[in-house]
Image (cartoon, rainbow, N blue to C red; front, side):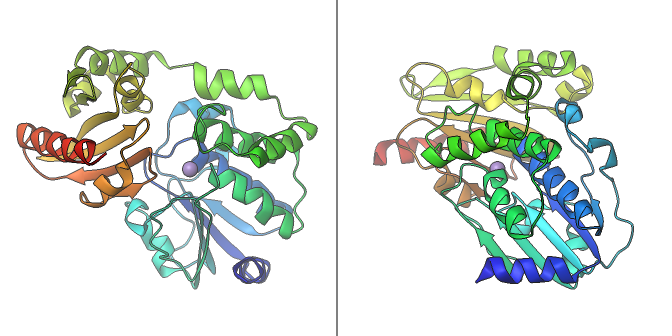
Length: 317
Ligand SMILES: [Mn+2]
């Protein structure tokens, strides 16, 4: 069984690197830090490499030990967490590719099974939830610090237990973490409610640009590199949800300029449209209600194309 292989590989490795997807969210960082603290408990030489992340997550235990670069090029073992595709290890995938053994633990439906051992459960609402099982299998004690990281992953990926991905066992796992002393209201406040002022300014720009299309079923907005420079924020987390939360909207589209004629696409849907299917056509993927991709076209053309694609999926439902 995969979990047995994973356990064996981890226990037999000395130098381990933990990686996660680019523009990491609370589940990505929370899962990475939980694994990091856990492997430290097993006295492994472990690094967690995340080149850039939002200061929203600065409250997490061991966050100051996150490295921008690895200590070495070839680790015994690389573990990718919360990452459905090796392409999303953008800019640091070499640590993964060069490692002697590669493990992926994830919950993305469209996971490409890119590791030697893939422990993927698309029904889990967060990678952090899967990790509880993995850490326990390794004999790691779920301390308050590990629990704080894991519950942050669960709370952020479920929007505070609000999304359809929440299962009865999600609450069971959460309850168990609370018994370890985790402060749930602190996690809510810091991970979900508090916004840095720069991020607020960026969000304000995106909010002012929201267009409601297709008789109210599609919401569209975007930000440019100039906006990011002006506000000194690259934290666009939550922007795509602005459109999703408007009454009657089925699909929310958010484009973010990442290069010349290059835009990252974020999509959210409410009830019918499988946005993961749409994003597969744009070199991406994700979940049914939340997915992302890339489009290489000038802005107006990119906008037109993604809106047309969403329209098509709207009419199929
Ligand atoms: Mn996740």
